Every structure is written in structure tokens, then in C-alpha cells.
Length: 161
Image 1 (cartoon, rainbow, N blue to C red):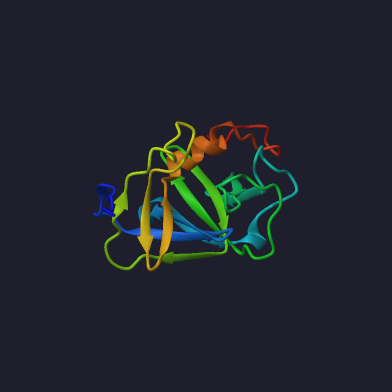
Image 2: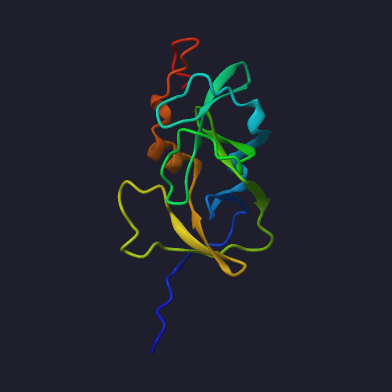
């Protein structure tokens, strides 16, 4: 039986692994602005598809939490303790995860198989990390998927974007 390898699309940039719901989500390290404890998230007012707000640079930014199938959760699972604040061109948003680690060495990002390549998917590729398969995305792709630009801060009534 002949094995068909997916083409390598990127090996150049350093990645970080965000562990959530038994999945590994790889994002470019340059898109992670900072890490905060989930205790710093204000969960009183939730954005659509989100779990709360995180204050940074005199604004409040929406925070989201995904399950293993990358569906938004509206409550924080007990095992999630870190919020990665991700950078966008015009602001930030948080993504709650169980752990964040830097990937050591090159990451070989492979194209998504046709069955996984949907127009509404935030996934941009697949990568092997150790003996596990990681899902590759970007802050911009996740923001579009989650509707981050539609978040309205209930305290100010303003869109932070």
C-alpha cells in the first residue's frame, strides 16, 4: 500500500501549542501577546460565543473557550487555567486553554485533507508534534470563526475593535 503524503506548506515560523479539550492547536508564537490566569477574566458579562472579558491596554477584550471539536463553550472548564491573549491587526482577543508550550524545532505544516477543508473552518493545516497530530490556525482565522469583531463590551456599549 502506497502512503500519500500531504505537501508541506510552512516550516519557517516558530509555533506555540495551546492544549484544549484533548486537542493541540498550533498558532504562530508571534500572535500570542501575553498569557494571563483565568482568574483575571471577568465572566459577569459574556460576549456572544464567549466566556468573558480581559482588561488590557485600557480596553476590555473578549475571551473565548473551545472544546475538542473547536466549538465555542460558554462556561470555563475546571481544567482550563490559562488565557492566551492573541494579537490582531486592530486589537486582541483571549483564548482559554489548559496549557501553552513553545514548539521546539521546525514545524512541518501540511495542507488540510479535502474532507477537512471547509470555507468556514479556522484550520489552516495539520502538523505532527511529537507523536500527536496538531491543528494549525492563526489568530485572524480564529477571530473570523468566532465572530470576534462583533463583540460588544456591555460595560461601555462599544465594540473594542
